Image (tube, rainbow, N blue to C red; front, side, top):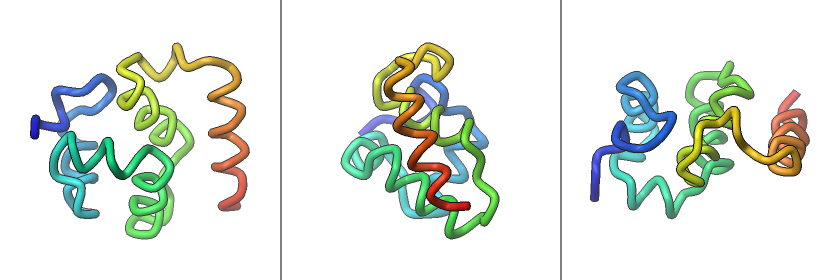
Length: 84
């Protein structure tokens, strides 16, 4: 159960945001997944952005979110757009 801020793309601010929705450690985050974590943040904050979603997925894949595959970005964009 490591600190979330040890993950790629997860800084101290995102770590606090995730803690606010009950995701306090790496194990919980990985079980939750990027999309579910995004939904929790969105419900709490109301304005969680697409870059946050990509950052969460990048953390799961252990890569900078800029390097997510185009297929993954397209899937995340479709998911994100369903909230508009």
